[in-house]
Length: 474
Image (cartoon, rainbow, N blue to C red; front, side):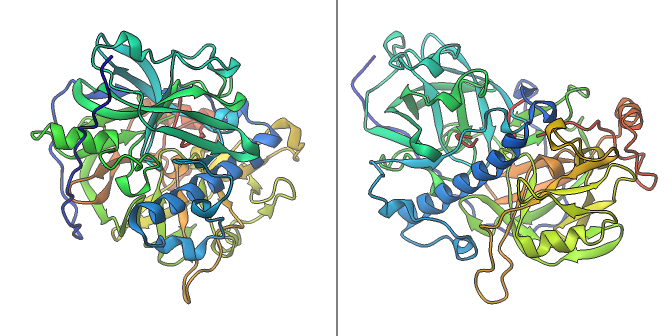
């Protein structure tokens, strides 16, 4: 291990443009990271339902505060979100970030990276809703670190540190804390020199192996929401990759599928042309920080229910979360739907027939898989037979902001399971394409009795899904 020198470069991003549907060329074939699912709906309890919305609240509170700290400006979405300005909190230590662990509260998707020389392998949660990389380190003596693979900086000839301390705060005072290091990071066959990462010396109990299966978290959003910017050279992993690997296409892509389909993956530096058909429909990032785009609208059974509002595309979120006004409008078009009394924010719907729900981006409507929208409830809810939960929830903290604003939506796995999604860093845009039709997926879908007759050929998934941003894992 060497004295700490911070050498990570940052990338100047290309201004965004509104693009018509085009096809992105794929990169080399050795850049796929298979994603495994470690938690699903079957692991959810009544308490976990409420905690999931708390997690989402804390995650976006932190993102807004980090954006303000890094840019000196209020994030535009913060005007439609009631949150505490963490930057002025007396409880906050340097680099503090308020988080809530995801644990069994969601379906998480993740894969492997290596750190150091010789390489040490870790499983991480890939999250487009955050921007930093952290891992538990050999200095962590707290019980929750047991069972996780620990980063050993003393065993790495390329580790440099320790550097500044960081503290990632959780609800109730729980924390992840440690020091920043730089080291070699390998992701999908690409090697990064001097990547900044947080080496945690303490994990809170919520990050124990049973509740949080991955070892750590790898954020894939933009630097403006990084919590490690006490180091001016700190950069998210993928941005460092672009800066160091000049030949790489500055894009990455996700396919998120049910456990039975077994083909979820993150594709780095391109797209996997075997997983989608037709062209991508692109929509530009409107504020660089989160992967924020314009949601053109939503329909239920062919009826428009939501107009144009901002949306964040978040692989680290299981459900779709919106403001109360628009979520109520959506469920008003689903016969038999009712708000759940406890925990608040959820709605019940008849399990059959599944509604035909679409979200529109870039001028094109994309259907949500019925097997993703209709969620089997935890037994503790004791709902009547034939009653399920809906995949769109409301968060009371997302309120009306500026005049004419309806807040914003967080678009997670409920929608992303029905599309192939590419995140284009270089052109600051998100693209969606139709998944390749799969007969085996149709069979699974029919067995689950959630086949939508109008779109049955397209849909193919079983009811299973869900998800920290210290926090996607499968």
